[in-house]
Amino acid sequence: MQNAELEQAIIQISKAKWEWMAACDVGTLDALFHEQAVFVHMGGAWGKAQELEIIKSGRIHYKQADIHDVSVTIIDQTAVLLNRITLLAVVGGNEVTNPFMVTEVYVQQEGNWKLASLSFTRLLAPQ
Image 1: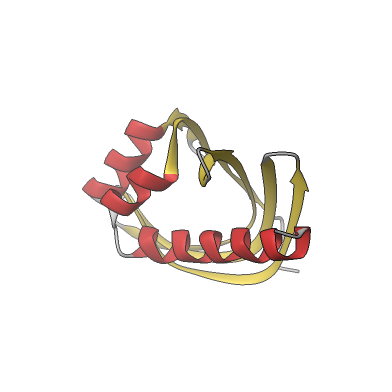
Image 2: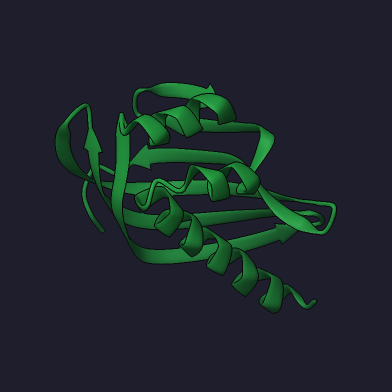
């Protein structure tokens, strides 16, 4: 696969991930998330099991991610995707909207792309 095709494949995986997160589809997310994945939020950092439990329990409900910009860089068997999004979420029972730059790191493992890291950086203002 050429880099442009790989980049489009990663963009599609990322887009589907937002849909699975909105639908609280922890089964599909479990298959996507690498066993050693790390997640960085405004409230802390944790691993795969805790992220899946947070989604399953509804402590964070990723209702809708509006993607404004996306870029992908492929480095060997690693893909780094940057999304500038506006995220509508329910956190602790409160609906909130925040502008974020989200960094997603995917690694290729046995022919499949696995999400190894998902980090949210809150932007000071929508751009």
